[in-house]
Amino acid sequence: MAQAERFRKRLIAACVRAQNGRGRVGEDGRPRVDVAIIGAGATGVELSAELRNTAHVLSAYGLHQLDPRRDVHIHVIEAGPRILPALSERVSVETAKLLKKLDVDVLTSERVTEVTPLAVLTASGKHIDADLTVWAAGITAPPVLATLGLPVSRQGQIVVGPTLQSEGDPDIFAFGDCASCPWPEKQTTVPPRAQAAHQQATFLYNALRARLDGRPLPSFAFQDLGSLVSLGHFSAVGSLMGGLIGGSMFIEGLMARVMYTSLYRMHVMALHGAVGMALDTVSHWLRRKTSPRVKLH
Image 1 (cartoon, one colour):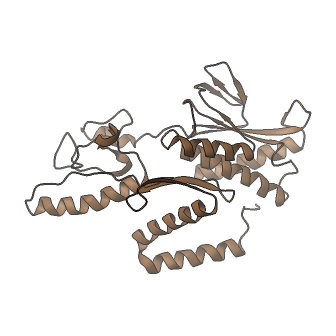
Image 2 (cartoon, rainbow, N blue to C red):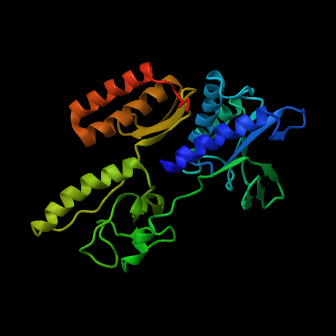
Image 3 (cartoon, rainbow, N blue to C red):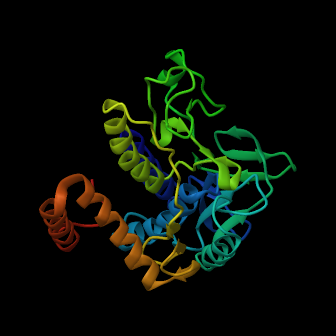
């Protein structure tokens, strides 16, 4: 939270400096602010859309006089050949089109070699101006996991088997982002997504009961139900998977946004129950109606 607050203040400060002629100036002679996001996974892509919206909101509240699209430049830098590499190619292509409409500069196959206070350098020799740089490339598990004496993956996750038991000690289970769990169908590991952690939590509840009763442990089987990427109030894209639709289905626009919100509400209900979810929904709606979108101090 402290980092997010620091980023917000730096973004406003960069906009104010630019409009007062103390920042960067583009080739057209106009003041400009550059934000570089390294990594085009779901985090980097969603952040780029939210920042484009933020540029409009800051302008609407009079915090800067810059043109939100012409003067605030957002760059998304990805080392791989396409954005959203963990999702289907169609979702990646359609999302790239939407980002282009939002005037977000997407650079793929560009491996970052150096980050300086005012620029990002890539292996191909590109020099990308950046007043602010956000690192959103990949995940790393908490360092404490490496101190437990258990085998860990390259990302620092505890290596577990199909039963979610750690390879170093069968009495220790791990799940969610801190576990590197095999996904035999894809010949890889289960992705660090909320739906994976949710499924593993349900599985582990039943597995631990079986262990306490002296019954053999079942094996965890991840079911990919699809993925949704939110581009703020602009749009959303994603794919749904499952037996009800007989495979996968691409969705975008209003339907994807509604489903994205519905999934969030389902997670809230799983944590706090139906009453807690209903109260949270009403509270969120009231805050949107009575509070400004950004702080004015």
